[in-house]
Amino acid sequence: MKLQQINRSLLFVPLALLISTLAFCGPDGQQKTRAAVITYASPDALVIRDGSELQASIGMVLKEKDVIQTASGPLDLQTTTGATVRVRQFTRLELAGLISDRTVRLDLKSGVVSAKVNRIGRGENFSVVTPTAIAGVRGTAFTVEEDYERGAVVTVIEGSVAMQPIGKDAAVLPEVVVEQNESGSLSAERTVTKAAVEPDLATQAEFASMVEIDEDLLVEASKSAEKAEATAPE
Image (cartoon, rainbow, N blue to C red; front, top):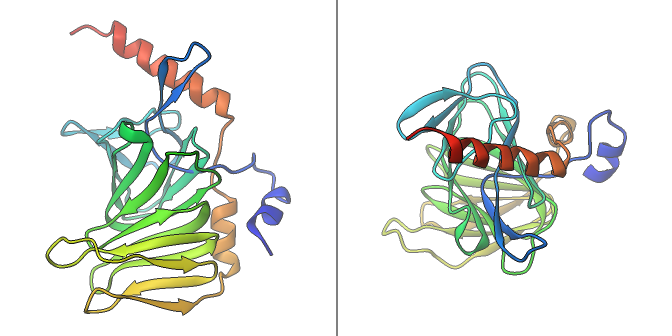
């Protein structure tokens, strides 16, 4: 059963997916800023900004270089690029590369993220980068785990992900495409080993339960945050 079919049967708003601050052109042709917004946060989730720890809260607009640290519960983010991300418990994630050259880059320091990317426009790309691999999205639902012993493990629920190992000398190695219902993990030689997987009901339910808000509300939240910053005292 596809995720789209599951989503329609649930009493949640339709899903979207993922992280951060992006640029787009408005009706006047000028570049605007759109930001990622937290749509769900566990009470012990933190946003670390400029060295200060802030309690994560629903509606908080996230900035480039913000670090998300979860503890016993998850945190959900949404962007206006058609992406929704769940930062699972005990995970540390930095929002990086979110404005320049229309790139969304999430740096996964440790833990697990689940993401569903519904659309990617021309010239845009979405990736999750770990210390050992890069997962480049091609319109998909997937999870990335940075495992202490195995390194990065990518599991694709829908679509496909281009997985590029990072060698011990920091060189990016040739990519391997991980398809739907497959997982890719790293060998000791930093090559990708693929295996068939069958998503269980718990995994499917996790994607279906990601919290999304209307895109217009995201834009309004971003505008409000920009206005507050512009009028804040130095």
